[in-house]
Length: 422
Ligand SMILES: C[S@@+](CC[C@H](N)C(=O)[O-])C[C@H]1O[C@@H](n2cnc3c(N)ncnc32)[C@H](O)[C@@H]1O
Image (cartoon, helix red, strand yellow):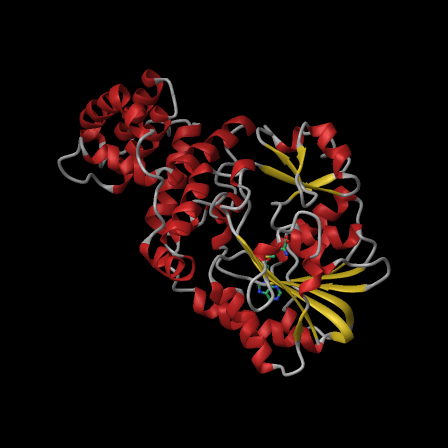
């Protein structure tokens, strides 16, 4: 038997694409299962970048390829072509890219007869592709997601979301202490809301202050809910859906007595690792937040959701999902709000948030909660914070964050945040 061909960054990226586009798997699940473990760290990062860039540019790659294909090849070959097309159009070395694409086609018994076609198509793409690429529109979201977003925000705004998704995202850090000091050490910029942004970070664990736990990776929008909660030293604070722990660390760094719950044991391990690295403390409980009892001064409910606000970083999401699971998540969000309210001390505050662009997981959840709980109020004054534009405040009193905000700085994740008081 001939030995199995050695895994390369491109073959690993192809494998990721095949599983996302063929088996509806999310990249985060695949990476969590260690699918890139066989590669050295540099190739692992490259494989992830190649796969992510290909998914981000999938519609553009397909438009270029369709001009040269008489019929649709099987998914494996289509993905070989897509991967190579994106790399070529981003300035990859034509000889190396085309050769490896041909080898990947030949390595699969069922597709080896197509290697000549792959070679011919990619040579044409190498000649003309890069100049055409730049003039193609930003890839659109799939219809199942685009339609409800157009209903909520209008076509122009959704076009701006799509441009932000295609542009990708810089790296944002939350400082344990002084953001200016972290910005200086890492070469980043302090954003108006206090996060530190790095446009070209390289390997995260090699950045100054990683080992010392001076900061953690957290999108600037994701850092806002804990700022809205504004935990005070000594307050009893519950983080109801805590993993991987970005918000738990913010609450602990503010000096609160934090209890952090998450249903997932694997994800809870990440919270423990993050707290150990940053030297912060919280009581960790692995279990269902709906079963939790107790009384707290403040609660942060970062509820499980569609994660449609994070597509800048996770372009696989609209490709692997079809929206069919979202109804159950919306029901769970409402149940969690109701349960959280039973855990609040009189006069306490609940910050509800989701990293979703769908109003059903944000504005509508709060409107419905206000109807279910007479006496419940929305506290808009909590948004009186540095960098928060009052225009972002919604009719029912929440904060709508969108990926097209701060476009000149590199955008932000989509989020919805509201502060409720009983
Ligand atoms: C949006 S993520 C939380 C992100 C986190 N707050 C952070 O900032 O790093 C939602 C989390 O809810 C957890 N989850 C889902 N259902 C849950 C439940 N019934 N009880 C507790 N946690 C749950 C998931 O495991 C997931 O980690």
